[in-house]
Image (cartoon, rainbow, N blue to C red; front, side, top):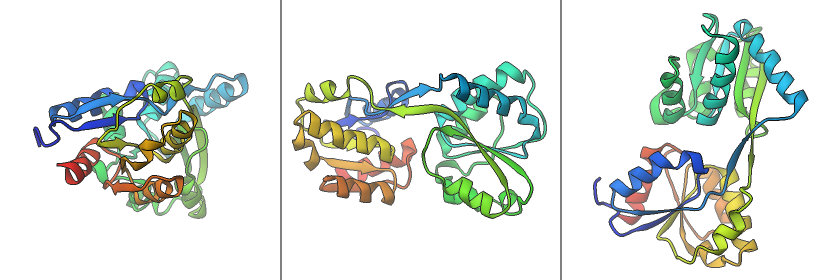
Length: 256
């Protein structure tokens, strides 16, 4: 809703290269967006890991299902695929977690199974093509580490699951200094993942910015909200999911 956040100051913690569309939405709603990234995305660069990725990409036509869990997985994974598969093979079915990930795939010319903003891990696992996967090969494009719910569940169903881990998530080198130099008390802080939240809490303490624990935190799930309370944040509002529309809706509901 245009102007619904007029005059509100929002601290944005997303990776720097992923802030633009979110900040544009905030500004269109009348808010001021203050960007202090609490997460950086670094492509895998070690020789052994790169060779593992290459082997999986070369074998891509042997997979029955390809699941992309984030925009970063699409960006880096599709760069790899385009290097070795100028024309993608017909075999795999494609899936995306979240509307932004699905949109990123479609921008690469790849149609995928997605249910808009509501497509989280649990919704993906409820899709009919992923119910009977015994003996089928499944590749999950993601960063190193992270949740294992999708892979574990598909293995329980008999699927032959591989993770293609394309990037690592890290704390930006200047995160503590940037937060220390941020003197404002925002009306809300938006966090889009549990790892971002953990980094934020660590940097708040390291930069003597404990006042931020009293700020309203907009979380993408109940799981992350529970994590926020454990870390010391006192005011949490849970969005429907991590999509921009849902996060904006949560901000408007709590501040508008």
